[in-house]
Length: 336
Image: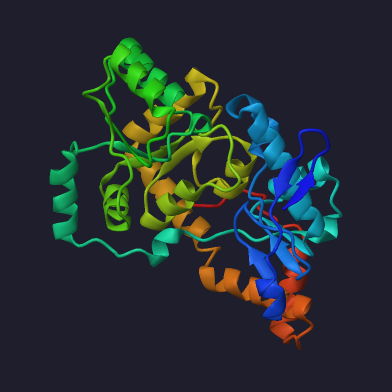
């Protein structure tokens, strides 16, 4: 352990020597957790939510993240994020050299999941008692995922317009779920909204296939997996207009201010009621998600591994390294 951060210092893990003795050329830390090492490293902090929404983190956790993230970014030869906004944020917050930070977007993880058959869809309908039509929100119940605002919006739509939109939510239930559950009861939405908890990869695929659309009101993201998943499954989506999701959607989703009931309500009503619009958004979503593949992501990382290890580079490697260091350009709407 190394103590960093001054008074009340944080203990940061150090390598026990295993990878050094094994003469590892490069180590890639895929998550925020890492350790200090002399081996050349790639670090992926994903996002700096604790700096933008500090109210969702106790002070000790904010300090812990700050010390660790800064230490691991400082030691890394390369720092990876998934959006150009995330790159700019990381450079601004941690004063990193721009050439040290690259953007590597992710493809949909559903490409690796089993595709559901009709029997699987029927089983999911029965197991979860799904309504004939519903909107879907797959997200762990962290506060920044904004489930509470979505419940308030559904209550508002029911009171003002008489519109009752069934909502199905999947994802692990955190300690914050107690507040969500209480609000669900207070608003008398228990018959309209259901939380399924964590579901299997196959069940997740079924829920995407069965829903009318996906709603994603998150307040902060490093990359919005539900967006990529909705596009992959051919489902229209409405999501927050926060920078990362707007960059990722590139005109393929309906955007709304997650703090504005009016904007969120208009987007969700359009998603629910407007079938021609849904068809247009589905086509845009297919075009959007076709930009990304895990094979391309793997090739980009392989090229950087070779470069950092001093291995010979192919022409493809050089091109991928060069393109990943340039700004990824998501500008301009997708045409239907």
